Length: 121
Image (cartoon, rainbow, N blue to C red):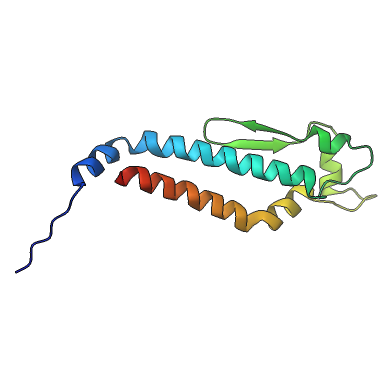
């Protein structure tokens, strides 16, 4: 009969006890990276309709503990994004997310891998 030896199990158990803290820290960093990536592409990728530049300049991120929001702070942004009966919709947020969904998923996967690495080290 063969014997199997598992090394590092004690360290793994200790790290597992700190999983919440490890995961929370890694997730927060992943959210920040995804937010800044999307913000940069929104502002430089040609998605935001440009007339005066105010709409694009008004787009700002707000990063909280486990979430982030990217939003413009001009009152007409919703009408540009969603359209009106007089103006076609130009959903610049959707365009940016659709174009970058693979990169955003890769960033998220990288964050999950960091958690797994920290648990096993």
